[in-house]
Image (cartoon, chains in turn brown, blue, purple, orange):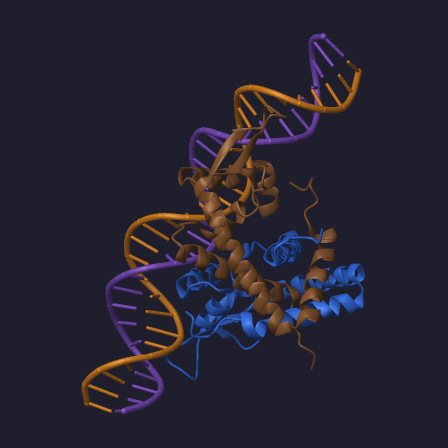
Length: 146
Length: 146
DNA sequence: TAAATTTAGTCAGATACTCTGACCGCTTCA
DNA sequence: TGAAGCGGTCAGAGTATCTGACTAAATTTA
């Protein structure tokens, strides 16, 4: 009988495994970042990202994103800077302590991806990424949905 | 430049897309189930499942699982029954209203999976499921980790 | 170009979710 | 049979999330 497991569950298991590994490593390294904060932080681009964009990508409301950015700001990981192109907007940017956390996270992500590739084999690992990447075309949020 | 997106993010986007579709459909059909409740509910087996097992699979503590089961129970979706094989344990079982919700969820899961398969092509879709299924061997929780 | 609409973000308040620690009763095993 | 382990609950605290209402800036429209 063919495995009857819902694809959602499969995605959940893999996602949580990755998240747990990264969060554990970050905590290990002495950064006090919660899961929800991390989901926001991780989406801040190199030149700063607007709050609403962070909210959209992390799939939470602007209010929630704002709440989490407040905490990241108080803890010294990010700052809010005016957006030169739009006076209503502000850019959330990573600062010193935030920059320090990035290599830790990047290293463990690379490590986990390597373990997965080792387990699945390169072919299947790249098939996984390929499928997920193409899936974004239909699953990534319609920018207007919120 | 090859896409530089973290596999975790890819998994997250797909997972949330599926979850949102299912939750929306369930709400549409008049069931007041929250996301957290759904993550527990979905893992209850046909003959009932123990609380600790639900907690483990949903990756929350027993207390959290108990809290959510309380709500599902009060709302008439599940019941707690004694486990005949172990007097300490109790089986969480789906009852009437819970049974009514299942076809709704199953239908939308099938629908979404069909859409994904249509977008990716059968080959890539099955490669996706194949990779994720194999990944469980290393990502599924070590039963002792909690 | 003034008015109407949309967009970015915040404030306030209410819920919902999750955790840690402590505990009780049943089971297992030396 | 006594000690350790397991399944579950209680209590309490903190975290995350939402809806609704609002301000101000930008954009569209008449």
